[in-house]
Image (cartoon, rainbow, N blue to C red):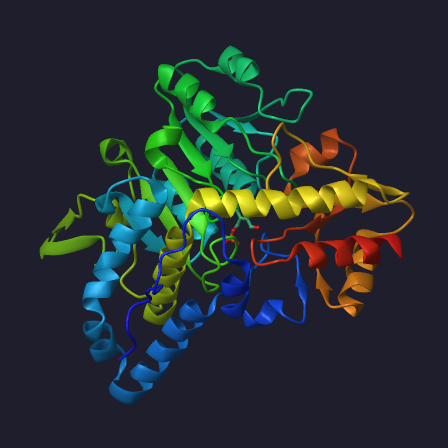
Length: 402
Ligand SMILES: Cc1ncc(COP(=O)(O)O)c(C=O)c1O
């Protein structure tokens, strides 16, 4: 049986770069700048996932899960600590989008209702939202951003009325380092009684994210990005006092009990959003990833990520023909840029030849924002704390050599 992930000595203050790199074999021979895509899981996460799969092969999935029952239950406490809420407010899912869809599907929306969203809205959220709104006769209205690209809270306030049932916010968009003013927006939305759904897919694991401090009703996130968990994992946090206003529909015998021929009862906590079947190995990996992040400390992670991203932005800004495209007043770990006369895919391929991983973000992923800025595509580089300053300089030199 695999022991739960423990870091022998908790890391405090600054991040011990040698140690986190030793835990991350993939970062040694590669300049890995894609933690906003799918990051490199650290060794303890890998051990959890692979170890549990081995155990399933030895004794079967049910017995293997039973052996880890306490750790699986403790996972709610761990994720609650990460997301500043109670364990009963946490549900595990298999992706950020699955969390978001489950939440959206549970929001009571009818004819004439309004949903306000932001220019940072993610394509995978916009499509189901527009579809649902069309089906029920509700409207979807993007709130304009200010000149700095941040959600304009004054513009939001001007649009709020009692017909607004949902405000959909994105903490950090998929296409750049902007960090939206979530707490102020949530406060304004609550004044008219709207529910506030926060996509924190790009912030969980790189910034402190707290359901309580941000004052939102629902948070959705993924495991594989900044948290460094396995693919196919996600999390949903739902404030206890809004559960009663939601109507979860995709409920099976994890979220409910069949109590009589035509009767059933729903769970009174966020787990009403979970389905019975899930990958236990991946769940343990996600819990391990959250423990790892908590042991490092989110403020230390935020500082290290800001340091690497700041160095990258400053270096790229010096390269002729390169334009850094990040918006906002304190950009985080996503660095977006374009290279004059060179397609983003060509930049990505040229960097890949030098073992530098970046990705491309295209207009349909953030259509409101990219259209407003007249952009079709961007190169996105997202360094985590395990990238060295020297590797950042290598990446800048490689872009300069294009
Ligand atoms: C801002 C944002 N929201 C949601 C998602 C969707 O996450 P997932 O693929 O885990 O469903 C992404 C993925 O890139 C994202 O960047």
